[in-house]
Figure 1 (cartoon, rainbow, N blue to C red):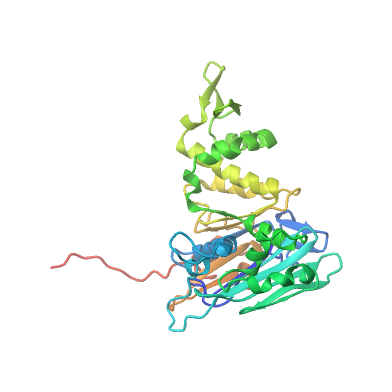
Figure 2 (figure 1 turned 30 degrees about the vertical axis):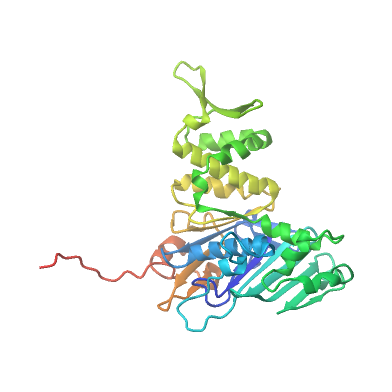
Length: 397
């Protein structure tokens, strides 16, 4: 479960920027929108990030994606082009003569522990790296390791087993990625690595990936077909049932429609409309996250979606039996309403005249009890809207 993600000096986020999924205790509205963890802390199930085009909201999604890619690939040292992972994913703020290091940090709850892991890097080396663990039962904090340049200091929990390897870690490789590859008795590195890899950073092309249907839809049908059929009925697809048939070579998926003669007719799923297929793909991703208690990041979730469909997808994450989370960017204000969201669930990204992006929460503003979130947002009260100047088009004489 995601607690926080921090990024610094990456694309338009020059200064330290924190996406915080911790709920504001003072707010009592929409308690079902929260994950109540051990009756001690509460976290957001859904966070919606609003902003104008080119404000930088997609850069926050890219930051999470690049963070995950560096962790996944830094041990391999170089890709097919001969570039290291840190060089490939080093994208500092460019409107500045001083190119400083980039920095990422994540805080996640994994099992009975809260882990804080992060690193600072440039295109040549990992400058620093750290990992800490807090026991959520005792609130005891322990150091797993701290790294500065080529020096790695290991905590007591892993020192005896890992100390002999620390001088073998290349300058361009993360210690987490390095230790995860070793066959160790401790599961700390595997657990944190897996927690980062489990972040569902959904690519913008996922609408078009039809292979997702064959790969994951049968499992979704087996787990909760009724929910899927209910979803398809709610968005008016005309589908009354969905099922699949397998043989040694292929999986065939069919939908069931009711004809004017009240009889049932089957249709191959790939003969359904593009909109229906995309809707099912979105549902699959959301249900996988909900079933497996994952955090899902989607950029521009509203694209090609009717607001009703977007609301249905969001509602899937309000499942009291799951700790799944959804973080999505959008510029569609249809759901920007106190009827749907708490104030701490609504975030804004705006860019200043020098190209710096800033992330703010609606909870940072003084909001009247009778305020219209959408109306005030479009009026520029919270920022995050385009600065539109007078522009006149005319034919040259």
